[in-house]
Length: 200
Image (cartoon, rainbow, N blue to C red; front, side):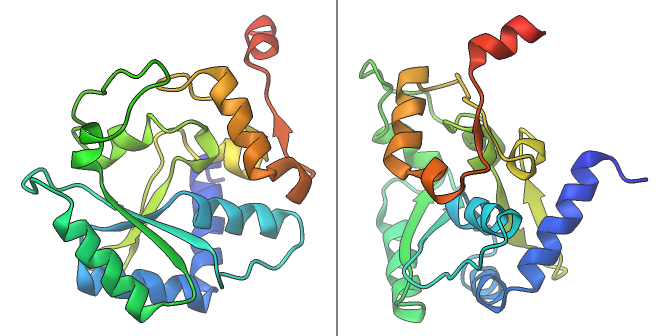
């Protein structure tokens, strides 16, 4: 029997391969910039919609693309890639970010600058919630490749879990409210970290 991560990964990969839109995006990314990953909301929402028996239309969706290139000194290349994707897929809202440059503009809740990130995996490990922290690309062999530092259980078990690495719990709760996740996907459960700690 597969372990939970392998089991959920196989389901996720099947969802992606059965989605013409996601497959087309991943194919395009692998040709334009082989080190780019599809990440965050578009993957998370695909899973949540599936688990709620809903269809998920990529039209007009936000699509996050990330990569890591420490040789880039400014955002020129990532903006060029974003513009190219906007031309190829005009119905999506694109956000392309070189994670090696995040420290130049991102600030913590207290206004402090973060240290330069060292990899895609480290970047994902700092994201506000565990279910969103995943990225997928099509590698040189044409195989799907996943990075998910927190695994996939929270995502597939519909748990909204705060990651305290970078943002406060208050910011995490505001994020949930502003995104209206609980209204759109009522089976989601926001996990209270204090209750979780008591139960351990």
